[in-house]
Amino acid sequence: MRRVVLPLFLIIFFLTLQTTLLTSFPIQRIRPDIVLILTLYLGLSYPPIPGGILAFFMGYLMDLFSGNALGLYTLSRPLIFYIAQIFKDRFYLEGFLSQFLFVSLSGLVEGLLLLILLNGLNPNPLGNLYPLLFTVLLPQSFSTGLITPILFSLLHKGSFFLSNPKRMGIKERG
Amino acid sequence: MRIRGFFLYRRYTLPAFIIIILFSALILMSLRVKQRRGVEFLDALVIEVCSPFQKASTFVIKTIHGAFREYLFLVHLGRENATLKQRIAELQKENRQMKEMAIANERLQKLLQFREKISSSVIGAEVIGQDPSSWFKSVTVNKGEKDGVRKGMAVISPEGVIGQILKTAPDYATVLLITDYNSAIDSIVQRTRAKAIVEGKGENRCQLKYLLRSDEVIVGDIVVTSGLGGNFPKGLMVGEIRKVDKKGHGIFQYAELVPSVDLTKLEEVLIITESSSVLQEEKGKKTKRAK
Image 1 (cartoon, rainbow over the protein chains, first blue to last red):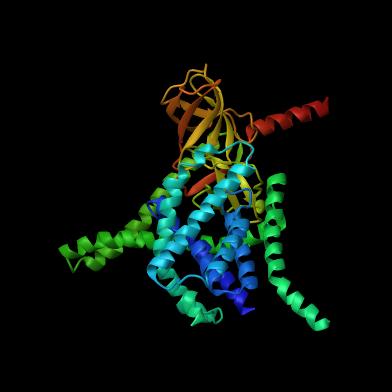
Image 2: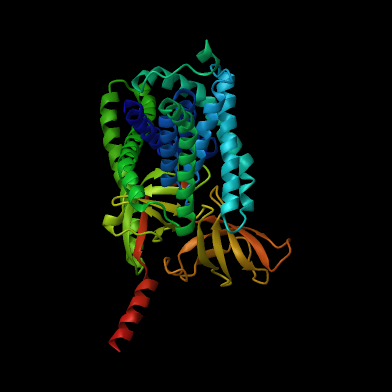
């Protein structure tokens, strides 16, 4: 129970920060996606079933509070979560560079997925979305990747509240 | 046999769960695409639970931001005269409060004047949160179904059009901004009366779609609402044309406009609960019934 209820509050807290504090940044393009970082952290440290439910809820919340009328995050966030689950035992994700690369690439992958879905589901092609790959998606993924080691470390320190999550990456196997 | 069945069950639990989760997401998506709405009760419930956190956070951020700004100002004054620091701090605190009140007063007065000017029923709302994603453009406001807010209602400010209501909860609502890709508003170019649809382009930009090549449009032209959609009253300012391109082929030309409202600095908005055009229609129906 603690494994689900406490992270729920953490999710709401992260979403609140993302929709209020982070939006007051003067440059919107570099606003990091801290909810994505939380999704990936859960993907690396949580069991697949409760973690999957939490990722689903995170996506659902993102959809509710965004102008996204299609519900794309409800699909993309569990997918990202399970991608993280697949990679967690295959890569060493303790260092700054590996965490930065992992989260930045996940952000890019999610962005591309959203773009494909947006174009596929809209009756009219949204050609003007493609420039955003360079003007919004790249800077945002970069900034998200940059703050990941700090957030991962904070989440790791506070993780005893949630449960006793396993160590990440290769260390898990000893 | 039972043991074997149990192991089979354990073996397929996780893949089955993943399939169920992704399938649920697809069903939700399909609901939203087909009916343009999700699970309304659940949506409203979750918005109701989460929005108070946003409201509290916005309040704290505004307070800290104001105090920090004043603190920086005070550092310089403190260097000049240490004995007067305390007094100045008090005066500055008072001054800050008064300034904030004066600014808020000015804003609200402007809203009130505008509200009196337009012949529609409107309610004021405060912005309590922004869109969590960079792909979409929306804001959350502190008025909802209990205040008469419904999906599709127009959201405006004295400077012009802001967007329309996308989702509602009893006490909160999400506003789809005009710069979002999903937004479309029937409009006309004020000078030439050329008809077009204003669609969001993200990044504080919109584009004019279905603007005929034969229509004369120049940079600096003002675009206003046509009133044809039913939600927006006629003549509200949408934005100013910044780019016109006739180079491509086809019967339409391309034009880009900047919204008249700075959508990155929204604090208060007005929601039109009953536009004049709707009122006219209803009046018409009542007259017919009377006949």
